[in-house]
Image (cartoon, rainbow, N blue to C red; front, side, top):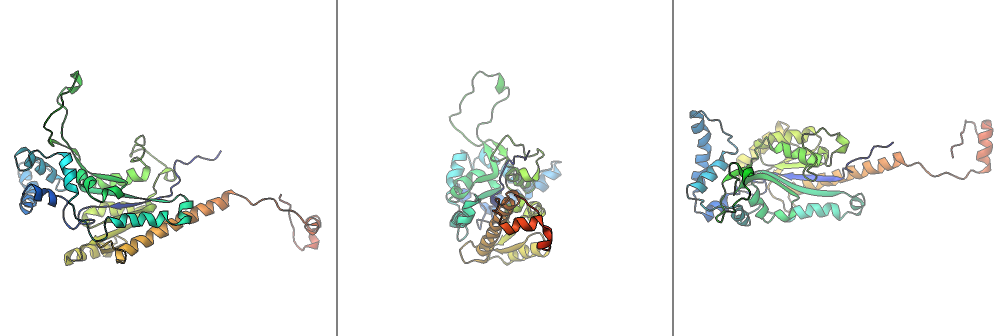
Amino acid sequence: MQKELLHTQNTIACIWDFDKTLIPEYMQVPLFKRYNIDEKLFWEEVNALPEIYAKRGHHVSKETIYLNHLISFIKNGPLKGLTNSILRDVGKDIEFYPGLPDFFKTLKDLVTDNPLFRKNGIQLEHYIISTGLAEMIRGSKIAEHVDGVFACEFIENPLPPYFSRQSELSIPIDLEINQIGTIVDNTIKTRFIFEINKGSNKNPSIDVNAKMQKEDRRVPIENMIYIADGPSDIPVFSVVNKGGGKTFAVYNPKEPKEFEQTDNLLQTERIDNYGPADYQDTSSTSMWLKMHIQQMCDRIVNRREQALKDRIKGPPQHLHKEDIQNSVNPKRSGEQKTLDI
């Protein structure tokens, strides 16, 4: 009995980092502007915190300690009253690199506008995996083109101790961010690669840590392209490269050091290629991504056509008189023939 496959594996995933990949600045810039917060000083303090806490005997994550510092700003005044709704509203002020967000639609159209790809049910999905703030990304103008966002999240109204013993819970009038809900650092990012790979993000009943055969996974890693900006993304670059996917780094054309950084990633074989963070139609980055999506689509089509040939045999053929005579008397044809109808 033939095994029933869980997925047809005809989905391609473009997976994007956010800060410095899709936008030239950190996404918190418009938030700090709205609340008149000294951005430079905020990040200087964040960078100093790990060493300060280490002297006190506390180990903290350098990548996500900024979340705690944001909450300190909320609790101590400068960001008082900050909610997830405000974060989403501020997200609309995020400025993107040239060509975005239209480029996301262009890549999807590249697949859906091709009759052969459409016939084979191929689709392209965009995902963002970021150490930034999910609500700001969801409020940005690129959100409508994205199939999923994996980033840091806050809780406004944490449940009190022994909440399970209470018959009803009060609803606070003045909401405010109080706790961290989800933390995403550059290592945790790899978890979300496997969520997309196994389909956990589409079907919550599939545990990301569950053992699953390669042929049952929704998006094979070889159908993924990961686009990011630097060395902090090496864990994801490594996972995607080992799985046969494609990796691409971008740099700000105005920053020579970023160019040097991405070139070093290529020289050390961390990535397949790199280019400027310019997503306009004629840029080298745009052309590279479109070319490799086209190649992935072609590979899926070829695989499906070969599977069709392997599983379906040709129809019975009418036999002519000489064919029957040759099969009965093989000496007439000079070779042995068999009847297979």
